[in-house]
Structures are given as C-alpha cells and as structure tokens.
Image (cartoon, rainbow, N blue to C red; front, side):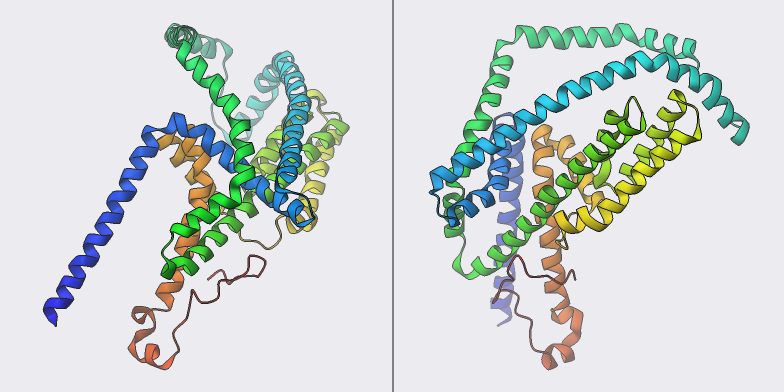
Length: 387
C-alpha cells in the first residue's frame, strides 16, 4: 500500500514537471517569435473585442458574414475618425506648448522656484538653471547623436525591417477580419481539446477571465476616453491654451486612482498661473475636475463598468511593465490578458484552499458538505463572491 502511494506521488511529481517544462517551452517560443506574433496578438485582441457585437447582430437575424462586415467597418471608421480628430489637435497643442516654453521657463525661474525655496527652505536654483541644463545636454549630445545616427542608418539601410513593419501594418486589419469571422469556431475547437473531466472548470475560468478583462478594457477605457474629452473641452472652455493636451493626459491616467485627476489639476493649475496668474482661472480648473470626478463616480463608472470585477491598477501597471521588459511590445499586449487569467486562477486557488481539509480541519471537513466548484459554473451576468 505504501509502495503504491509512493508511486502515485512520483507519477504526480513527474506530471507537474512535464507541465512546468511545457510552460517554459511556450514562454521561450513566445520570446523567440515575438516580432512575428505581434500582429496576430493585436488582431486577436481586436477580434475578441468585436466578437460580442457580431454575436448580437447574429441574434438580431443577420448572417455571420454581414455582421462581421458591419462590425469591421464600424471599427475601421472609429479608428480613422479618432486619428483625424486627435492628430491635428495634439499637433496644435504641442506647437502651442513649444511656443509657450519661454513663458513657462520664466515663470519657473521667477515665481515657482523662489516660492518653493522660500516656503520649504530647499535649494533648487541649480537644478533649474538654464545654463546648467544646456551644458548637460551639450555634453551628452554627441553620444546621443551617435546612437540616433546609428539607429537611423540601420532603419534606412535595412529594407527587410521596413518591409516587415509595413507587412505587420497591412496584416493587422486582414487578420482582425478573419478573427472576427471565425472567433466562435476557434473557441469551439480549443474547447474540444480540453479533457472532458476538466471542461466545466476550464469553461468557468475562461468565462471569468473574459469577463474580468472585458470589464477593464470595454468599461475603463471608455471611462478614460469620455473623461479625457470632457476634461479637455472643459479646460478649453475655461481658457487654458493647453487644455486639450492636459485633459487627454488626465484621461489617460484615469485608470490609476487619484493619479488622473491629480495630474490634471497640477498641470492645469500651472498652466492657469503661467497664462493668467489669477485665482479665477485656477478655480475654473478645479471646477472642471471636480465636476468630472462627480460624473465619473455617479454615472460613468456605474454605467460603463458597473459591478463587474476589474483588474487592480497596481496589477495593471506591474503586468504591463513586466511584459514590456520580458517580451517588448508583444509583452505589453499580452500583459492584461495574462494578468486577468492569473487573477482568476488565484481566486480559484483560494476557493479550493478554503474548501480543503488543510484549511477547515478534519472535523469540519467531515461535518460540512464539500463545496462543488465545477458542477454549475456561474453565468457571466451573475454577481460573484470576490472571496
């Protein structure tokens, strides 16, 4: 009996070792093929985002091809309109910023730095000294110029790199169309490969991962977009020359609690002080972000995100940084899906642990019925216990 138990433990250890080796091999293969996989991953994410709309159109009576054509056309139009609207606005704002740099530098030298030094007793003049900064830039310019010249020479001489870039840009919309058309079939084929005994568990975890990632991407990104436009229009109405740029920056950082409005208030206040130097426009900036926070808390977040479980901002930042460091741009694309799956797996492991004999003890395990985790996977719309 003891010999059979020992053999079972060895067999279990070997199986876990095989899975670990398979995981290492997959990670190594992804790292090796990162440049090739990048357009496929981008297209797969776009296909995953658009598939619910295609399914909804199918349920409304349209064919799959017609629904895919409509969704693909709508996604393309949204991207083109966004580029046509944002690029000129951002270009104009950057030009305004460059033209206004002398005013900002003068305000920092004459007002900002003296006020901080007098208030807190610190010496900042050397760090904001224009001559010191110019010497620092000049001393490193030759090396930076050499690196830039080397990179530019490589890009211009390497026709293969340019061809690969153009190919990836062309591939993304083509692959997105095919992912939209065949998404349900690909999901069904993957599900057919899952062992039947584990299918309920895998189905539940996949559904929860999709819900979590969808809650963040579809909900939080819409909140960021609406707030960015709202902040920009509000600051422009107040009279801030750089209002659109500051609003877009604040909207971009909205997914990190407090950082979005805080960065917008700081940048907007500085812009108001440099441009006008009075309390009237500072109060206008504060009013814009105050109204934005009220709208976000009481309408945008409940309406667009709801009570669905999203990713914690710390997990998002950590995942994006780790993915970018290990796999470059491909890692940044995969960071959020991997973080969503990891979060769901950790919750599942916690459920298994709290239902285990190790956690509840032998007496409680005999007295309390076992918790069945796989029999009835919850529907995506049903609320779930975060524990």
